[in-house]
Structure formats: structure tokens, C-alpha cells
Amino acid sequence: MLRVEGLPDSPLDAARVFHDDYLPQVRGNPEGADLIVVCFPLAGHQHRTWRLAGIQELAREVAPARANAVVGADSAALDETLDFLAHAPGVTGQILAVDGNPGKNS
Image 1 (cartoon, rainbow, N blue to C red):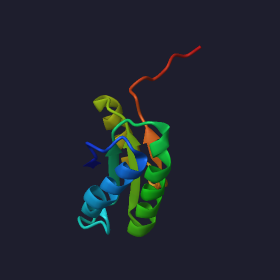
Image 2: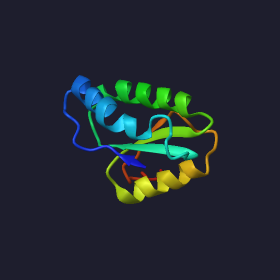
Image 3: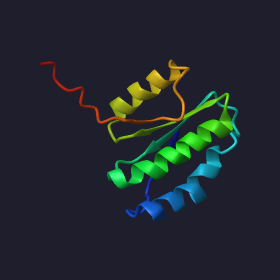
């Protein structure tokens, strides 16, 4: 898992930092992983478009390996999501938001 931290608030600046500093670590899948997961910190909805485009292009580039992203800060929810992704071979190029709140049944 590639944990992304310390991005600027501006979506354009955050995208630049991600593409310059983080993406090269997993681009081309240098470790030969079956699954690459990028963990983004929480951010406003303005960040979703650049994040999704980056993950989708990464997924295309590393195929047949898979690339996905998770957004959240709850460790237990992140662990559960990583386990889900490890056992979901058809899921790639997606961003999953996790908050650790399972909701309530009505």
C-alpha cells in the first residue's frame, strides 16, 4: 500500500505533488505486485476527479495487475477494505471511500 500524505489543499497543487512525488513509486509496478493500493487522506470533493483519473490510468498501465485507491483515516476500515480488495479480482481502477461507520439498519 502506498500511503499518500501532506498534499496541498489546492486540487491542482495536490495533483502535481501526487504525480511528481508518489506516483513514480508504483508506476510500472516495479515490485511486481498483483494489487497496488494507494491510500489518500480525506479531502474535499474537488479532489475526486484528479484522483480517479490517476488511479484509472495507473490501473490500465499495470494490467493485468490491479490498482485501486482508498480514502479515509480509520485504520480498521482501511484494513477491512484492503482485505476486500485482495479477494475481489474484478475490482480495479476504483476509489473506495471508507470512514469506519457501518451505518445503522432501519
